[in-house]
Image 1 (cartoon, rainbow, N blue to C red):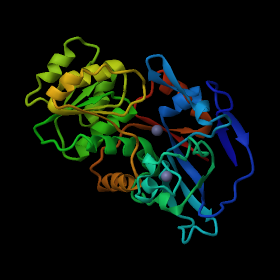
Image 2 (image 1 turned 90 degrees about the vertical axis):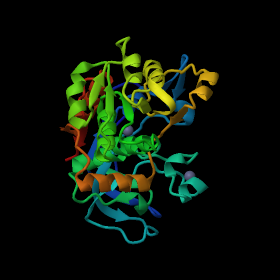
Image 3 (image 1 turned 135 degrees about the horizontal axis):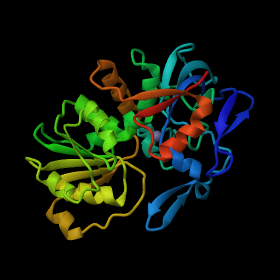
Image 4 (image 1 turned 45 degrees about the vertical axis):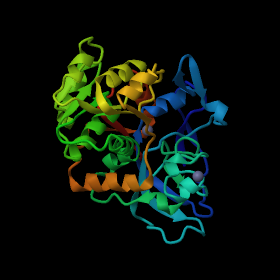
Length: 350
Ligand SMILES: [Zn+2]
Ligand SMILES: [Zn+2]
């Protein structure tokens, strides 16, 4: 098999060729067709996440060292499985749930694998989808997405799932309530599409790059704002009925400030983006405004099934999608880092 690996932090991915693994225990071997290219891989390739306040989260401090095969939006054909896997759909295409845990703890057994304290995520701790084959730890992570375009289905495992789970954390809200979506990149457009698919129409998209507004409106945004404009917080706060919730797909200090300032009493601010930074939160203000600040990290296998069902129903507007050969994954990461990708790039695996 071949893969494109991080061999040195911060450097271009390198092509590697090795023996195709043989599935053991409950493992399933999948021959990949597509893998979405996610912005968080830019940080993993760099070897760290900016935690704000000058602090960095280094992958190597968590025992992760190159070579690493990234890629956590894999889609492919089931080939074979280990002796303990039970019946598997050999020859059929499946979307892979990548946020796998230890498989043994209470969270994993409750189906909240993404909240496992010893994560074994595919494409992060385990080898991922920037490769022609991948090992999945258990058949329960294989999701039937038939009826959905396979390249698009791949993107549902991270950006789709993440935005579905995050926008659900803004609930309950009424059709009259305004929801702010910070960021109109791949995740931002998907968050807008998720809200729109859920029937919501009062969606304010915010991005510092006005060239992204057309795509935001096409995804379902009703208003667009530039968070760098000093008038934006006041304009958002003045929206009729007030802003009930803000979902932040950027996750920077500035977007947090604009989003939280916009919220009405009882509002919820959900952080998803990993740009990095810190928030100064007035404790008295948080109490008096009865504000909720919550982080949201990907989602669980059941939520991914719900996202796939939403995509099958045709309610979810597809975001702009570009297919590129797997060999161009490094260039794609460079473009994501520079903010030059509109929508989503999916690696096509020959
Ligand atoms: Zn991702
Ligand atoms: Zn676990």
